[in-house]
Image (cartoon, rainbow, N blue to C red; front, side, top):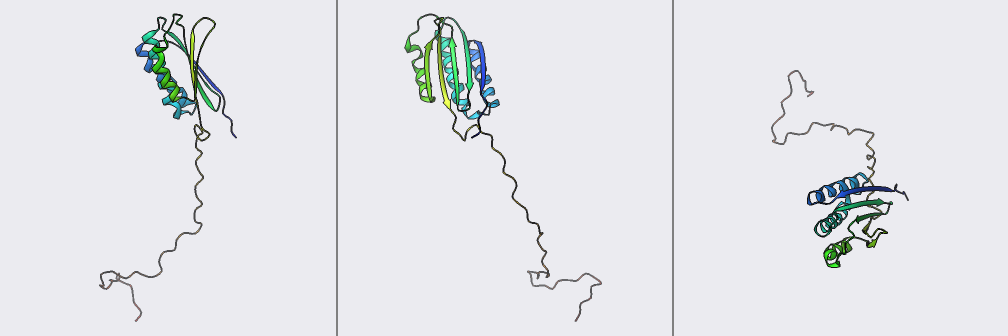
Length: 169
């Protein structure tokens, strides 16, 4: 089994409505670079939903986004620096979507009181592996022979011979 190189990407972002789409495009570019184009939709939609929730509800708009690819899973984590209390209802619909669209997810607090929300997607063995083109099929070593006889004219009229051609009678 061929193992993939592990990859890591880190992005510090000041969350605002204009940056949400930009961050999605940046993450999509990295996933395509890592040959994980099939994971662009779930990863970018989940991250954008979390960024929108931070923009709407958090007082501190700074966030850190990290992506890890270990050859089998892409793990995306978003850490927010908001130390204020948060109601679960503020993130309820966002977390419900992430739970439905990911293979695993979780939320934890850091030592500084900030929160980290992470989710993962597993890539199947056939996904993310570049296709190797098949070698061309072997060709015929002999060319096709041209027909030996002169085909009869379909209209029934006699063929005219070019001048200078003698016919043995």
